[in-house]
Length: 403
Ligand code: AMP
Image (cartoon, rainbow, N blue to C red; front, top):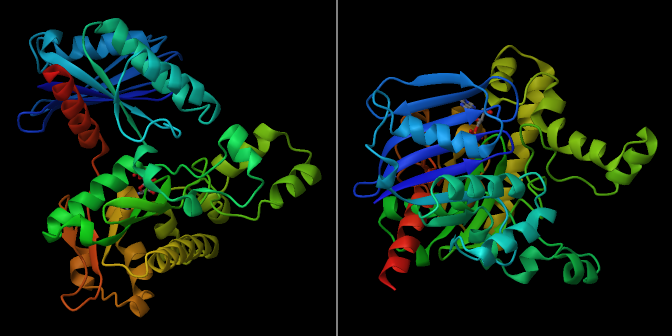
């Protein structure tokens, strides 16, 4: 079965075409600047040259049409006709409490995703545009939605409720939902496979540290707590997000600076984190370069980032009364040797013992970086959210076809 995986943003659309017979990626690419002038389609067919095309793409329907014509293109294509695509899997950021797993797209699912616009006003409308665009271009092809929040739906009440009046949960569903669930699920399962141990017996802490970052406590294969909250703002310090802060700061600053709701949202989501403290960049590569040159603000930004991550790992070890496996993934987690080193050097109280040589190895494969006598297995596992979407889509569509 060939499956097209789509990740639609408000002005972008990422895609990957999978051949599920061997889970290989036949082609992948990205459409950027949808709705602006000079939209760019970058297409990378497996084993062939990458191509870029600049044109006017005003909405997602056209974007998918261009993607489909690229996938079937005489020179750059990888399939003979779009009929070969038997299912489409969509990444959707917010599934609220309604979606505890991936689901087939039908009228009820679409209505529910629309109801959730309120909780994810930037992301879910974009996902919906992707779904509509795929339906328009491939009307008879089954579509599946895979949610960033679904894996965290196993969290107990004590993890997901905030200590605020219960009426806010009852009326507006104000609670912790978490994010990056597809990634936390993938790397926790990959960790168990790598160690050849049943996931039911493991206490795993997964650290998805990219531009956005979150930590999850995975006990027996289920998410029992996660650092992102009702929105992705809570938890770790990130590239441009503040992470945890005293909520009283928000009205205080709004009052002092006469900020609107959208201005304060923008301050906390786009102008905080590494960027705000370093004054230079939200990118960990530039922060570590600055640190190597002895720049005080870059050093402070790194120290705060590392310290906050380490505190979360410690708190999740306490939440689960222990930890067997610690996993690092995503852009920073997979690539920053120095961040992993600094975090792990201060976790010796948990029995963590780093192997500095293994930590310095760069490879795109799952690998162990802890010493043989470390009480906690520490792994680096490249995440693959698209593969989870493709697998879920394959399973759901296969099951539906058998009914
Ligand atoms: P992601 O959101 O998972 O794509 O991660 C993107 C982030 O990973 C970038 O903003 C960088 O901060 C970080 N990153 C990528 N490569 C490296 C590297 N070699 N060292 C440190 N950080 C990196």
